[in-house]
Length: 77
Image (cartoon, rainbow, N blue to C red; front, side, top):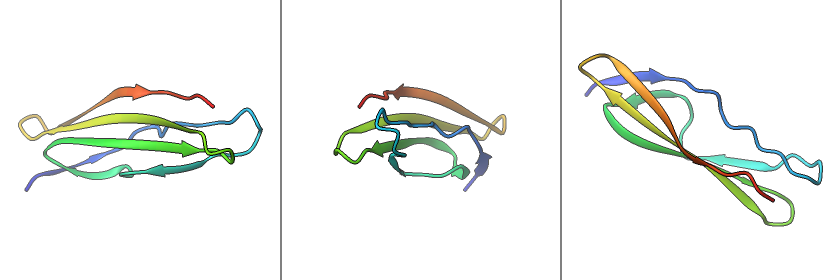
Protein backbone atom coordinates (compact mmCIF):
# COMPACT_ATOMS: atom_id res chain seq x y z
CA UNK A 1 0.00 0.00 0.00
CA UNK A 2 1.19 3.52 -0.81
CA UNK A 3 1.36 6.22 1.90
CA UNK A 4 2.25 9.92 1.72
CA UNK A 5 3.32 12.30 4.47
CA UNK A 6 0.64 15.01 4.72
CA UNK A 7 0.83 18.16 6.85
CA UNK A 8 -1.48 21.14 7.21
CA UNK A 9 -2.14 24.11 9.46
CA UNK A 10 -4.58 22.84 12.04
CA UNK A 11 -7.73 24.97 12.50
CA UNK A 12 -7.76 27.37 15.44
CA UNK A 13 -10.90 27.63 17.54
CA UNK A 14 -11.79 30.33 20.05
CA UNK A 15 -14.71 31.08 22.34
CA UNK A 16 -16.27 34.43 23.23
CA UNK A 17 -15.97 33.49 26.93
CA UNK A 18 -12.18 33.76 26.67
CA UNK A 19 -11.78 30.10 27.69
CA UNK A 20 -9.89 27.72 25.41
CA UNK A 21 -12.28 25.19 23.87
CA UNK A 22 -11.55 21.44 23.99
CA UNK A 23 -10.67 20.15 20.50
CA UNK A 24 -11.03 16.58 19.25
CA UNK A 25 -9.83 15.36 15.85
CA UNK A 26 -10.24 12.15 13.87
CA UNK A 27 -6.71 12.25 12.41
CA UNK A 28 -3.46 14.13 12.97
CA UNK A 29 -1.04 15.26 10.25
CA UNK A 30 1.20 12.35 9.25
CA UNK A 31 1.08 9.34 6.94
CA UNK A 32 -2.09 8.84 4.90
CA UNK A 33 -2.91 5.96 2.53
CA UNK A 34 -3.69 6.42 -1.14
CA UNK A 35 -7.29 7.55 -1.60
CA UNK A 36 -9.61 9.90 0.22
CA UNK A 37 -9.65 10.47 3.99
CA UNK A 38 -12.03 12.84 5.78
CA UNK A 39 -10.47 14.64 8.76
CA UNK A 40 -12.90 16.22 11.22
CA UNK A 41 -12.02 18.67 13.99
CA UNK A 42 -14.67 19.41 16.62
CA UNK A 43 -14.32 22.07 19.33
CA UNK A 44 -16.47 22.15 22.47
CA UNK A 45 -16.88 25.02 24.93
CA UNK A 46 -17.83 24.88 28.62
CA UNK A 47 -21.50 25.55 27.77
CA UNK A 48 -21.75 22.50 25.52
CA UNK A 49 -21.68 24.39 22.21
CA UNK A 50 -19.60 22.89 19.42
CA UNK A 51 -18.06 23.83 16.11
CA UNK A 52 -16.59 21.67 13.35
CA UNK A 53 -14.04 21.90 10.57
CA UNK A 54 -13.75 19.20 7.89
CA UNK A 55 -10.78 18.57 5.58
CA UNK A 56 -10.61 16.11 2.69
CA UNK A 57 -7.18 14.54 2.27
CA UNK A 58 -6.69 12.93 -1.16
CA UNK A 59 -3.46 11.03 -1.80
CA UNK A 60 -2.72 10.23 -5.44
CA UNK A 61 0.03 7.69 -6.09
CA UNK A 62 0.71 8.50 -9.76
CA UNK A 63 2.17 11.93 -9.05
CA UNK A 64 3.19 11.42 -5.39
CA UNK A 65 0.80 14.17 -4.45
CA UNK A 66 -1.51 14.88 -1.55
CA UNK A 67 -4.36 17.33 -2.07
CA UNK A 68 -5.96 19.01 0.93
CA UNK A 69 -9.37 20.59 0.52
CA UNK A 70 -11.32 22.36 3.24
CA UNK A 71 -14.83 20.98 2.91
CA UNK A 72 -16.42 23.18 5.54
CA UNK A 73 -15.22 24.99 8.58
CA UNK A 74 -17.74 26.64 10.86
CA UNK A 75 -16.89 28.47 14.06
CA UNK A 76 -19.85 29.61 16.10
CA UNK A 77 -20.67 29.68 19.80
